Image 1: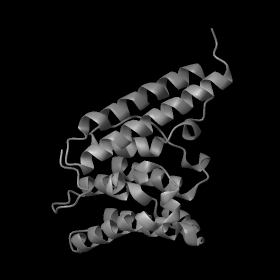
Image 2 (image 1 turned 180 degrees about the vertical axis):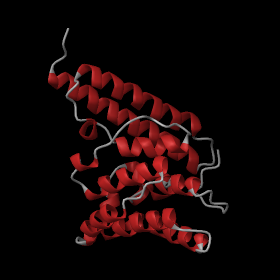
Image 3 (image 1 turned 90 degrees about the vertical axis):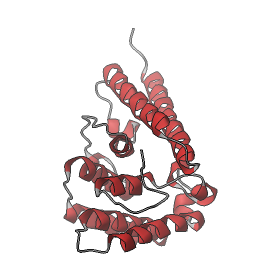
Length: 212
């Protein structure tokens, strides 16, 4: 029996929301000093199962539209999973999502497409509303590009300060709870920054450091 397109789309939406909810549970546990691994691993595993099922139900599905593949790959890096998912970032319009794609790729492949990163960051800088997002991604990629001669600790402090600024920033406050905007700022952590600190083996302390 073939499922209708409407049913498939609703199923994809529900699966996407489930991933977000599971991620939030992990981030809240993390911020409270609890082990977030069970929730984060469950978020990744369920999402991968959903993606596989969606591909069977609708072989023409554009996964970049139906799932936040880039965020999934970033979370997967934290829990030592390497999903074989290819992301065509050119199918995504939003500059911040494109930058997330490049971040996820860098975590798993060590490839930093500097020209594309600069292009998408420049787009964010054109609007006052997305200035904090632009500065945040610049801080992320600066950390990934840093070498031992750089003052890594000061770059981490800068990224931490930018995260705190999300509490009063309209772009992040209007986004997903996992982004730490508005009242959610003190309830979750910056899992993107955490993945970068893990990638560069940052030895210092931070509320955003992955310790598991």
